[in-house]
Amino acid sequence: MNTSTAGLIAPGRHDRKNPFLACVRVRRSLTLPGSGKDTRHLELDIAGSGLEYTVGDSLGVFARNPARLVSELLALLQLDPAHPVTLAGGRQVAFQDALTRSYTLNRANRKILHGVLERLPAGEARNAFDAVVKSEELAADYLFTRDYVDVLREFPSIRFESPEAFIKLLSPLQPRLYSIASSPARHPGSVHLCVAVVRYETHGRRKTGLCSGFLADEVSLNLPDAPVFVQESAKFFLPSQPDRDVIMVGPGTGIAPFRAFLEQRQQDGAAGRNWLFFGEQRRATDFLYEDDIHRFQKEGVLTRLDLAFSRDQAEKVYVQHRMLELAAELWKWIQDGAYFYVCGDARRMAKDVHAALLRVAQEQGGLSSEGARAYVEEGMMRTERRYLRDVY
Image (cartoon, rainbow, N blue to C red; front, side, top):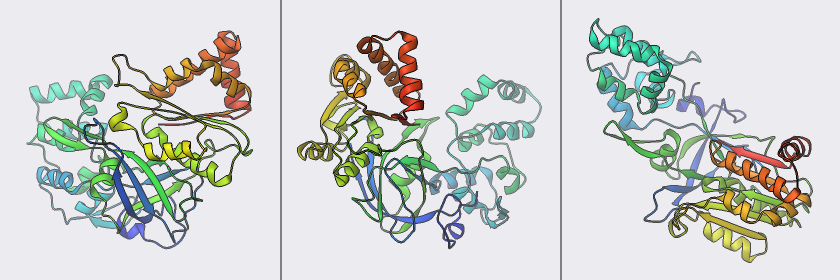
C-alpha cells in the first residue's frame, strides 16, 4: 500500500486507501510514575476531514518506522538510500522513504529467512540456518524476537544486490486499529485514543511497538502528521433503545470504547443503567481515566463500578473474578435484558470473561453446561445481539 506523504494528501474522500493527516493536539500519560506500563491518552484533530464516527468504531492509524531503525537497517544493507524504488501502486520513491513509510520493519517475516539462506555460502552456518528455515516451529521461534536489523547483524557478510532485491522480501505496512475513546457528540471534530505503548528489549536492542511507538514518540504535536481513517463497526454498538441497561467489561486499554459509551449515554440522556468492570495492575498508578470515571459516578451516569487491580494483593484478582463474586446481581441484569460488552485482549481476558459468563448462567440460571452455552452463545450473541465483543 502506498503510504508516502504525497499519497496521503490526495483530495477526495478519506478512507483506508486515502487516510487523512490528522494533528495530535493532546498526548498525556494515563499511568503514573512507578507503573510498569506506559499508557497514553491522545486527542486527534479531524476537523474538516469529512471523517465521521460513532461510538464503537475504531480509528485506523498508519505508522512510520522510526528514523533510528531505518538508519540502522540502511547501514547494514550498504545500499543507496536515494535509489528510486517502485511501490505496489506504481509510484516511485526513494529507498529510504519506502523503508520509512511503506513496509513493516519491526518484525521480520518468513521471506527474509529464505532471502538470507539463498545468499549464505555452503558450510555449517548455512546447514544450521537451513534447518531453521525448514521447520515451522523453529522459524516461528526465531522470528518472534527479531526484526530485520537483528537478522542482518547475525549474518554481516550477507549482501543484497539492490534495494529492489531487499524490498521484495518485506511485508507491506498495515494500519493499526484503535478503539475510539470519545463520543463525537461530546467532542466534535476530535477523536480520542487510549494507547498502551509497547516497549521491550531483545538481542541487546531497545524496541517499541510500531504504531504505539509512533504515536507516543514520533508524531509531532499540532502538525498534520498522523495518517488516519475511520473503521466502522457493525458488531459493537450501543442499544438502539436508550432505556436498556449495559454491562461493560474493559480491563486495561479495553476501557477506551466504554469511556465513549458513557459520554454518549450522558449526551443522549439514556435512562438505562450502566455497570463497568475495570481492571489493571495497581490502583495507585494504573487506574486509567480515574477522574472521568469518578465524574461519571458523581453525575449519575455510571450506576455501578467494580474494580480488579491484580497486583494490589497477594492473590491476583481479575475482572472475571469480580463477575463471579457478583454473579447474582449480574444474572439479574442480564435476565432484565442488559447488553453485555467485552473489550480488550482476545487471547486470555476475553476467553476468561466468556467462561465466567457461562458459569454465571449455569449457577444462577440453573442451566446445564449445554443450556448455558445455548443461552449465551446462541441467544445473547447471535439471536439477540446483546453480547458484543471488541477484542484484539
